[in-house]
Image: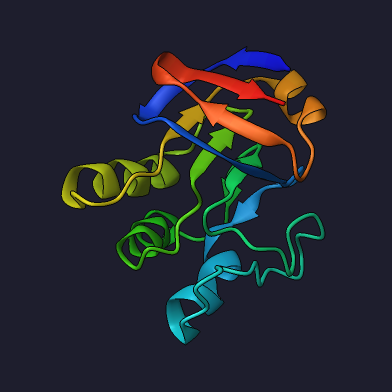
Length: 147
């Protein structure tokens, strides 16, 4: 087991199976099926992300460097949370962008029955170490355990 420490964007604790992207996550392309067509597993629909394409994101620990794409990113994350199709947590190796941060914070503040802990600035070593299927545990204070 390895432990990493990052900055808390959206608080909470959880444990989930990792799904890992080494490239940026295009939130709209990735969550489109979940939001538009009712895919409860939130299967990644972004063909330009070979690490995630076709994989379930809902209920998983989504490990990524950053989000990319349009200004809809924050709204897409908020809507995924509102529809209960969100990842168990989002763990960024790099500092989070303002759009993804906005979506995570709005979901945390506006949705009482939804939890999606978000931690950023975990470092390149985090993303190099974590692999699909590993167990991720997010603790208070931005502590992330990978086993």
